[in-house]
Image (tube, rainbow, N blue to C red; front, side, top):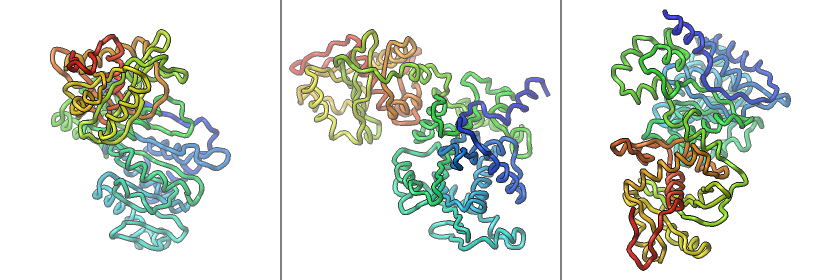
Amino acid sequence: MSAGLAEALSGAQSPRIQLVPPSPVDDRDGEDAAWFAAKYGLEPDSWQSAVLRGWLARRADGKFAASRCGLAVPRQNGKNALLEMRELFGMVFLGEKFLHTAHEVKTARKAFDRLLAFFDNERQYPELAALVDDVRRAPQQGIYLRNGGSVEFIARSKSSGRGFTVDVIVMDEAQELSDDVLAALRPTVSAAPLGNPQLIFTGTPPAPSMNGEVFTRVRATAHKGEDSRLRWDEWSCELDADLDARESVALSNPAVGGDRLLWETITDERADMTDETFARERLGEWLDMDSGSSLVAGWVATEDDTSSCESIGAFGVEVSLDRAWTSIAVAGPDGDRTHVELVERRQGTGWVVDRCRELERAHGHAVFVIAAGGPGASLIDDMNAAGLWLAVPDTHGLTTACADLVDAVAQRTISHGPQKELEVAVAGARHRPLGDGAWAFGRKASTVDITPLMAVTLALWGYSGQQPLGPDDVTVRF
C-alpha cells in the first residue's frame, strides 16, 4: 500500500466538508445510541459514530444543536444503517415519533423491513419485541411502541405528509426531493410532540435528471458556513480529482477497504460507468456545485444586502422546458456595478404577458429579453402584440450572455441581494456544450429549475448595450 493511499484511508473517516453548529453541546446521547446499536448487531464505523453524535448533540437548554442535519455520502457506505441507529435509539430511549420518507415505495418498504427485524423477532430480541404496541404492514407501514415512540414509512409525493404529526422527518434519497414535496412534509414537525423537532436529509449528488433542488440548497447553505442550526457532513472529491486514483476513492468513501465496500467492486464500477457517472456515484462529485466552483463562490462573494437598481436596464424572461415555471429578472446600474434581481418566479406561463405589461407601464420603455431557441420563444408573438419592446438573442447571443454573466461574477462587477430561488439555480446549474468550446447553461442537464439564473443572464445581456427595436418594428435578433 502506498503512503498516499494509507494516508487517504486514515482520513476517510472524516468528511471533506463539514458544518457543525457552534452552540455548546452534550453528545452523550450519540455515544449511547452507538452503544445501543452495537448491542443489536449494528456496530457503527467511526464515521457513523461521529455523525450520530452530531445529530443527537444537544445545547445547554436540552434542544438539539442541529434542527436540520444533512449527510452526503456515496452509495453502499452504510448510510441506511446509520438511519436505523438514529431511529432505533430515538424510538426506544427518547420516545420520538419519526416519519421516514423515501423517493420510491420500494425503498420505503425496505427501510421498514430492516427496522421491523429488530422488533419482530421475539426469540432473538425479546426486550425489543416487548416494547411493541402495534405494527402496521398495509396500506401504511409503521412500528408503534408502548412508550409513544414510532416510525412511519411513506413514499414522498406532493400530499404524502398530510395528516402526520411527528418529531423527526427523515428524508432518505434526498437527491430526489422537490420544494413542492418539502412544503407538504415540513409542517408535520411544526407541532412536534416532544417540542424538539429535527429534519434529516441523506443522499448522494443529484444526477442531471433528478429534482435535487432541496438537497442542493441545503448543501449550498452548508458551504456558506453561516447557518448555526445546520449540521452537514459531506464525503466527496474535488472537481479535478483523479478518477483512477485509489486515494480519490478512499477520501470519498469512509467504508472502503472493509467488508462492505470492496476494491474489486469499485474497479468493476469504474469499468462499467462513464467518467461523469463514476465521479458522481462513487466519488460524490457535485459538478458546478462545489464550494470551489467559481460561479457558486463568486455568487456568494457578490451578494450585497444594500444592492439595488438605480434605474431599469432590461428584463429577462425564461420558461422551463416543461413549462411548469417562468421567471422574470431585471438588470440595471448600481453605482459602478450592475445589479441583478429575480423579480418573480411563478408556475405556468399564462400570467407572464400581463406581468410584463405591468412592469413596462411602471418603468417606461423597458426591454424584455427572450432566448430565440428557448421555451420562452412561444411568448414572443403575444408580447409583440402587447406592444412590448423585445430583444431575442440567437444561439450565439445566448452563449455570449452566459459567458458575460460568468465573467461579471468572476470580476465582481455584478451585485445582488439574497434570494433563495436564485441561489438554488446558481448552485444547481450545469453547462451544455454548443461546439467549438462554446457553452450555455443547460436546461436539461441542470439538477434544478434554472429559470431564475437564465432570466438574470438574459437581463444582464439586454442591459449590456444590446439595442432593441420598437414594437412597430420587427423583433430584433442577435
